[in-house]
Amino acid sequence: MIPEAARCVKCGLCLAVCPTYQLSACETMSPRGRITLVQALAQGQFAADDYSHEVLGSCLLCRRCEAVCPSAVPFGMLMDRGRELVRSRQRWRERLAIALLSRRFWVRLLSRIGKTLLPGSAPMGKMAAQARFDAPELEQTYRPGSTETIGRVALFTGCTGSLFDSAALEGAVALLLQAGYEVQIPQSQVCCGALDAHGGNAARASRLLSVNKAAFASMGELEAVVSIASGCGAQLAGYSVLGEKHLDIGTFLAQEQVISRLHFSPLAKRAVVHIPCTLENVLHGAEAVLQLLERIPGLQIEEAGKRGACCGAGGTAFLLRPDLANSLRQPFTQQIGELSPDYVLSSNISCRLHLQAAAGAIEAKYMHPVTLLAQQLIRD
Ligand code: SF4
Ligand code: SF4
Image (cartoon, rainbow, N blue to C red; front, top):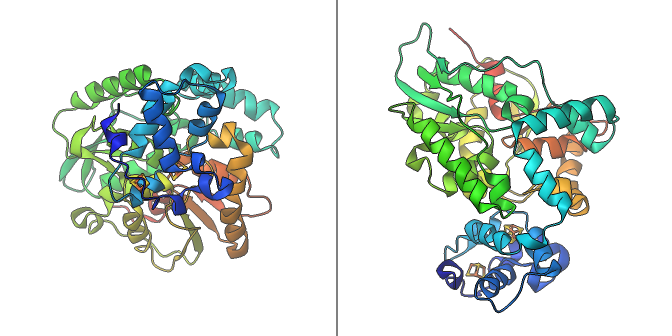
């Protein structure tokens, strides 16, 4: 018996916000249906089979259900547990994808192959084209130049951050230095473990989190550990490995003592801001990101889609369940097309790649919000 699953009172409030229930109108594909299934699997009333694997595997892990649940059922944790229970039914394709994508070496190699061999028009080719192999290695320590040092923070870079979002990492360092923070980037940090946890490999996820805990503990006294991608941030926050010190980059920068030290040059452009479900439902960092962007004079900001809704990139859906992922992306891409912005900003790398893969004729630049903030930052 899982005590956390027993907290579900079956009220059904979560059904209205669950994208897989909305698409299927099937109770099994709802949050409470999945909770019931996980409990039945844990109690041995039900054996793992292909259908139970599909029911749990098709959850996008957007955790919108968790955000509205009056009983505070920890849905993310229950889904990881459930996927561990049905892992024996995982298809080789899914197991391989998770194993490769959570290892820096393989991600680099596959991206290089994809960039060379896949046509730029194919969705995976578009994603591989975003990889930047010439990004300079980040140093372990950055100290503010002319400004006084007001604190020390560490940066969580993630396993694919330096390859797919090096501009956001460099931008975060620039913003933190300008605000007066020394930035530590532990070289021994590894993948956050989200892919393994969501793929049912709890043992590896736990090992990765222990390595990260030791890596950040070795940095000495820190004001915060700051993560860039909200998907990684949700994993780090959920397991309390980094304690209360972990914050999303937007939430850290939006604190009064930090934001008051940052100034931006005007930009007369339009930006569509996509708030990832992990940023809204787990990290509660949406307002901070919008508040920061509003500091850029002249920038017109529109929010994409319904806040907290998944764009289809959740979990591994954008790789393994393209039909589901594409149908959830459609309202977002339609809105982006209608607004025809200069920038599309998203705090999560997989959401951004997923949205960008459907960009079509849209000329917008896709980036992390901190990349745009760093671009407009007035530096000493
Ligand atoms: S809202 Fe919470 S308590 Fe109600 S059915 Fe959904 S998970 Fe269960
Ligand atoms: S995490 Fe998202 S997709 Fe999964 S059950 Fe909850 S609302 Fe539905």
